[in-house]
Amino acid sequence: MEVPLVHPRPASLELLLLQAEHMSSYIWEGQCLSQKFCARRVDDMWDFLRDHPLHPRIVRRLQDMGFYRIIEIGRLQLDWSLITALIERWRPETHTFHLPIGEDTITLQNLEVLYGLPVDGHPVAYPHALREYMGLQYLEMLQRLTGFQPTKEAAFRGASRL
Image (cartoon, rainbow, N blue to C red):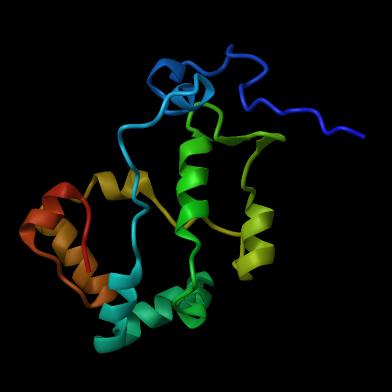
């Protein structure tokens, strides 16, 4: 029995409003990509954590939220080719991966099963409350909650780097 060829083109472009800018159009048209994508590397974080243990308040908060398991799992062997392939097939309009065999998405149940992370209960992020914090208030809040105070530059970006 001959296996039919599978073409990775979506069945309908109705929901794919960003298709003109998406890299998958180059793949479907048989063109080579001039831009190579490098997946973000988390190795630097694990090296940092090895040399600088987490503050006890951060450990306690991670445990309370059920996310400390990620730290316990530690550094994983990652397949960067697979990650890059998945990045190339991710569609932000529909929050799905467009694969040759069909569409797929990641669910909270997947995370719960794979990592043992809790998916029920209160949300972890509180964007409405965080909007009230600006500049120095943001720095003080992080110091109070985590024992860590980032640079002022990070506070104005609303992000912190390890």
